Amino acid sequence: MPSIPGAVGGSYVLRQPFIAAEQAINWFPETVQGQGKRPKYQKGRAGLRAFATVTDTPGRGMFAQDGRCFVAVGATFAEVFEDGTTTAYGSITNTNGLPVWMCSNGSAGHQLFLTADGTGYIFDLDANTLTALSGDFPANAWQPVFMDGYFLVSIRDTRQFRWSALEDGLTWDPLDVAERSIASDNIVAFIRSHRQLWLIGSRTTEVWYDQGDPLIPFAPIQDAVIEWGCGAGYSAQRTQSTLAWIGQNELGGGVVVVANGFQPDKVSTYAIDLNLQDSGNLEFVHASAFQQKGHDFYQINLPTNESDLSPVLDFTEARLGSANPWHHRGMWDVDTGGFTQDLAAAHAYAFAKPLMVSRADGTIYWLRDDVYDDGVVP
Image (cartoon, rainbow, N blue to C red; front, side):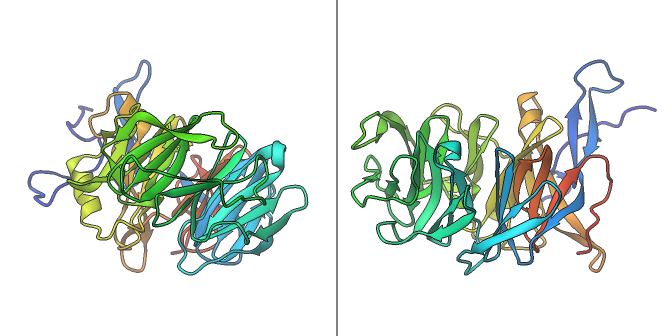
């Protein structure tokens, strides 16, 4: 059978459909690494099977490390176990279902740190108790990070971040604070990459490091000032040894950039840029990163419009030279006869399984390549 030019490829839909109207939904191209009849073929995304359930909604965050897996669903913080059972440990703030971030100091401190709607919490991994932080802990805490023995957190609508005592997220000194000052824009996304802290503002980015001073541990790398900021704080993710986020600066926004050293590269196509910019307010757009069957994916959900499919960047195919490593994911609604956004709110790799928590309810799904449907009733 002869090959059909252009039959294997990603999504590229412009406003002028007579120029470009290719849309790959739940399919993505995979390069054949070796001898094959074709250099590429179209691979279907994994099917879904329910793995566990938390009685709340919506899914807001997931974290897995050292054989344990935790989820934030609505106002519930819970643990997911290998046999698919769950245990709820307490309540967290939930005013609008926005994402929840988590990090841990592991066996050094036996703590997990999370923030939800501006409130910080410490979960004791030994006692299995959840404590809401107060007192000297900052109000309006935003994104938590763990690095070099410290928990750190950015303060929303400011240029400041704070850090905890060494290996103790219950202790916060109000003097342990720093403020970015090379540029004037507020921190929008706060994330670690390797042993660097990226303070991504609304227009520019500064990169800081641990200078080894116990009184003032963190300082800016003087030459690491980047003329790219972020238009969607929930979009910043670590993926394939770098960072990706929805970029913005003084000239405009609504594009996806990936850090290449201290010089972010634009990786979204014109069609994906159009997709993002047409979706409306990007403030509440969120992304998640995960790996499956050798592909590193960066997935974007656009909650302002339910009919917007979820754009997905395949980092692995991009590294292999794909001219268009983007596709879309969605759920087929039998009632409306159309696609809606993908269900994924957050991903985690636990118990040797790629898992994700649904944005629609408290279901935790197992992404399985050996099934060909979602086992989901919309």
